[in-house]
Each structure stands twice: as C-alpha cells, then as structure tokens.
Amino acid sequence: MQSATTLRARVSPEAISKVTRIFNGTLDDIFNELLQNARRAGASAVAITTEHLADACLITVADDGAGIADPANLVSLGQSNWSDECRAREDPAGMGFFSLAGLDTVVSSCSETSAFTLAISGAAWTGEADIDVLPWDGFRGTRIAFHFPPQPDGKLERTIQSVAKHYPLPVILNGAELPQTDFLAGAETVIEREGYRIGVFRNVYSDHIDTINFHGLTLRHKLPVIKEVRHTQWSVKVDIVDAPELVLVLPARKEVFRNTALDRLIDLCREAIFAVIRQQPFHRLSFEDWTLAQFCDPEFPEAARQLPPWVQVCASDSSCEVPAFTAISSDAAIYSDDDACSSVTFARLLAWSRGEGSDLELHCLAEPRPMVFFAAVRQFAGYPWYDTLPHYTRTAEAMLDADGTEARPGSDQAAIRPERIVLTFADQNDAELQLETDFWIEEDESCWSDPDSARIVLTRRSNLDPGDLTELIIDAVFSPSDDSDADSYDTQETRFRHDAAVRAHEILEGADAATLTGIRMAFGDRIAWRIPHGRTLRLSWSSDKVNLELSPFKPARVQ
Image 1: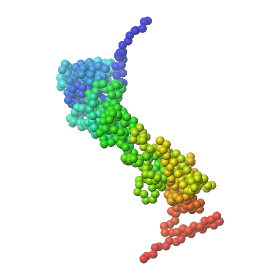
Image 2: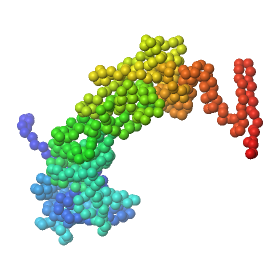
Image 3: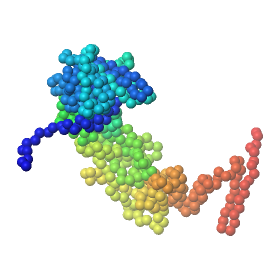
C-alpha cells in the first residue's frame, strides 16, 4: 500500500460528540462568552433576566446587536460569521456559544438577512438530533434563553454582577442597570500605548488579582512588578482597547497565549512603570532595575544617595526592622556584621568612642575621627556613589597590656582583663582603621545556650557595671530554640538571663558576688512570691544548720 505524500489537518466529526466535555459550562464562562458576542455584534446594551423555578433557573440574555446571519454558523464548532474587521481585531474562534453545550437552549435572532428561532436540546449539541429552524418575528438583535441548575442564595445574580463589573457596555439585570467600574480605578497613572491602557499602581500587590481586562473578561496574568529598595512597589494592570495580536488560549479563554504580542506587552508595562518612577522626586531602584530603566531612558537618574543607618543586631532577632533611609554625607561609611557578637561588639565600640553624655547618633564614631556608619544594601552595588563609599569589615583583634605588648589570658577564663582592646577594620581598598574599645565578645558553637561558653574580654578601666554587661551578653549570645519540645521564649530568656548575670558579676566582682547574684535571682523568681505581704523572711543556711524565721506583720504607725 502506497503512503500519502501530503496531509492536511482536519477536525474529526467525532469531536462534536465530545463538545459537552470541551467546555466547563460554568455560569462565569457562559455569561462572559455571551456578553463578548453581544459586544462584537455592535450591541449598545445587554439585558439579562432571571427566573428561579423549583428545579432550575430560567435565564435570558438579549442584545440589540447586528444579529446572526446564518443559523448554521451558530451551531458549527469553530465557525462564525463575524465581519472581516472583527476577525482582524479580536480573532474570534467561533466557540463561545458552545459554552452552553448540554443545556436546553432557545436562540432567537434577527439580522439584515434572516430571522429565526432554534430550540437546541441536550442531544442536539452533540449532533445526535436535528435542530429545527423556525421563523421569528422579533426585534433586531439576539435573544438566548437557557435552563441552568438551581442557584441558591443569590449566587446567580452575584455572578452576573461580577461579569458585568468591567464590561464596556451597560448591563441591565431584571430591569436595573448594574454598577460598573473602570478596571484601572485607583491607578497612580494611566498610560495609553499601542492599543492598551496601562495603569501603574503604587503598593498594590498583584499576585492574587486579575491584571488584564479583555473588554470585561478579566484574567490573572503575571505582569512586571518593580520593587524599590525598602520603598514603593510598582505594579500594573492592563485594559485592552485594540490589540488584535494579543489572543487567548482556546477554548477556555482563561489565559493569554504566549507570543510576540505578549512579550511586547510585558515590555510596555515595564516601560510604563519606569516612566512613572521617573516622575517621582527620587527613587531607590536596585542597580539591576536602574540598568533596565536606562534602556528606556538613557538619562534616567541614579538612586537617591540614601542608606539606612547601621543598627545593632541581637542574636535573638528573627527579623530586624530596617531604620528609615537617610541622606549620606562625606563622612559616611558602611559596616557589615558577620554575626550578633560582632554587631554588639561594634555597637559598644561606637558608644565607648562617644563617651558619656554624647549627643551624637548611635551609629556615629567620634574618635579618632568622626564617621557615620550605614548598613550595607547589596541591591545598590554597582552605583558609583555606593561603590566608592568605604565598606568596612573587622579583620583583626588585639588585647594589649599597658606597655603595648600582647596580653595573655590568665588561668581564670571568666575574666580576661587586658589594659587595652584594639580592633582593626579594613575597607574594600585595604585601608585600615584601628579603633580602641573596652569590650569584645566572641562566640563559639554552644554559646547560644550557655553564656559561660562565650569568650568575653573587658578592659581593666571599663566603666561597665554588671547590669550593662549582662545586657551585652544577652544581646550577643541569647538565641532561643524554636524546637517543638523547647521551653517557651520567656522561660528560655529567664534562664539565660540568670546565667548571664552570674557571669557578669563574676567578671566584675568575683566568684562570691556571682554566687550571691545567682541565689538572689533564683530566690526572687521562685520563692519570694510565697512570702506574705508585709512579712519578712530571715534565712540562714549552711551545710550543718538551716534557720528560717518569718517575722510577724507590723501595721504602719498612724501619725
């Protein structure tokens, strides 16, 4: 048998038998398709009536458009009698009417050339029964009536209101015109280009909303979003005016077909966002986004010379609130922390350099020369103004005795007390800063749960008291466990605070003071609340004798 040398694609007649499974036949789909057909037919309005029966809803959709010229086209899947102009502008597929497939439907239409009525039963949709074409003496336009399963609690009416919300023609439901709104209402700016109305929105998050309006049929498609660094987020929505190349995936018509027209729309949306940002007093685009903006406008200005002041990060912080951006000056620098211990050490260094009673900001260095530190913003890397700022990291530490020689820790690891602590910082150009401080803390793998595992260095002349040192240890080291079987945050923090206070008192006041501190805190937390108000407990405790005395209540003297 000789094989054919050429073939031509065709639709099998069997496909019509499966038409009721090609379309979902939901109310949304039906109303969207019927309203789109009325619009294409040149209608000035659409009237919908609903009647709730015991076992069904009787729904009628009528328009005053051009009507249907050939009833055969109406029930021919993929075939339509739209004008050449309509075909060129909207690419109608001749499938929308089949959203009614399987439903008992009556269609009446009057055009310039014909007037007819069709009664289509369930079997007729699949080609298993003939459809009688009867005359109709009615108004110019099309009237479609169909039965739909019962829709309780106003669901039918809510569906119609939703479909009509952004439809370009008036929709009358049971004699009352439905409210409608501009799809781009609330936009910062609306830009019209190449057959689209593009609305640019400020701080509207578009992940879960419809973003494209095809003449009332709204779709959710991911369009460009530009997020400025710790500033405004810009998004877009698009209203289709006349874009024949942008088409929908058939038959469902629930997503945009990916082609060059869609790529061009994405570019237009991004250009619209950049055009709006260009009009703002300043911007904080990342360097990457600014590079894209320059393709649209080579004169697009750089991001504002602003950065967030550097702030201390604590080990317990699951997230850190970034301070407001402020303008940078000639004495600005960037400091990058490795961890909470480095951050707390640096914060103490800044405070020590400023001295008591200073009115400088917390992120300012006073000695040996004034400097204002800001946090690193990696998205700005690439901007010349940002890259030329000195970016410091800590590179070395030294503990020194009074004669300048390296101090060696004693046998008591709880109290490393050199005369001086010098920390070295280097920028991206290897320029160094050697800064003195009175405190340095360094972590090891277990110190998040045990303050005794942290290495703490404190100069002999430090004016830190045990309370200050306790807070520094907590800030640098305490990181609560979030395991399901862990104690609550408060319980973990209380236990760690006790241990940190004992460690602080041991460093500054000795072992006996540390022991008393631990006893005092344990007593205050666990026992003191049992002493009746106004009474006094006297306790004497040793290995061979325990004495407890609760003094009687003494009322206050009346003057």
